[in-house]
Amino acid sequence: MICEFCNNEFSNKQNLNSHQRKTSYCLKIQGKTDIGSHTCEHCDSSFTKKYNYNRHVKTCKKTQTSTELAELTNQLINCNNLIVELRVDKKDLQERYDNLSKLVISHGIEYKEDCKLRLLPDEDEFKKLQTENKNNKNKIQHLTKKYVKSQPRVQYTERNVIYILTTRLMKKERRYILGKATNLTSRLSTYNKSDEHEVVYYQECNDAETMSCVENMVFKFLSAYREQANRERFILPEDEEIELFSNTIKKSVEFFNE
Image (cartoon, rainbow, N blue to C red; front, side, top):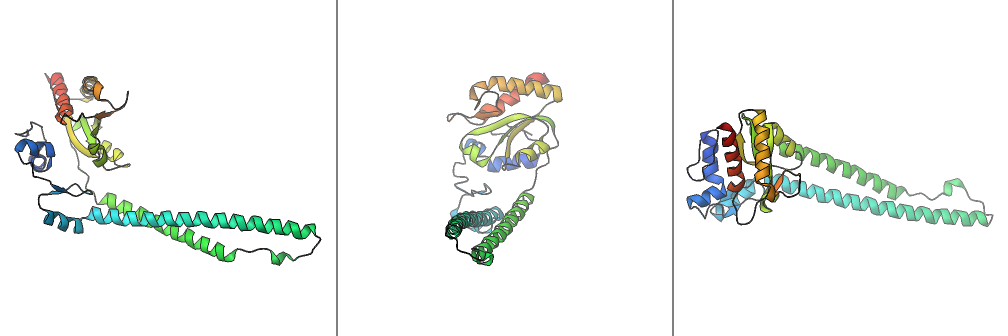
């Protein structure tokens, strides 16, 4: 199905409708410049009214999860800092004890082994912090798994595709990942291990051989926009829209389909 505004193709009506409602460059073509004036920084939902945006932020699961993760991470950092301080204090006290012991021995003074300097209070605090640190790590792992599970994974049935991916941060920096994948769902899962990636555009090829040829052609046409040589990341110029990349993929696929 083809978008009547920006000519991008989609596999079903649902994806097309979602694209026409949410995609910024398509909304600009439609003349809806006020759409998305308030965007949630955690889930990218957009609202025209600030009231609706504020109400969404209070119930956004991603916002709540991110906030809780940030708080636990700060607690973890504080615990690590305290542990480092205790280790330094313990080392300093132990050195002072060793020096005093040598001084006592050098003067021929007898002393009992049970008078040896003990650091029980610091040791207890150290163990307590270690336990708290471990618990915080477990909480972070639990929330991370919960957060990942809460993100529905789109199942792409198309095979042998050329794709464009990006993340929220990369999109702000106008950086995009282009490549090929026999199974786009599997490839997206691999990328999402490091950060949440968004499929901006993809085009299916007839077979795996055609897919490889199309990728080479696309990389050749867009070589001037590579972030680095032999890398799959490309930088979109400030005066260009994403169609610069998507139309190149579309035309390359059409070339081999003719």
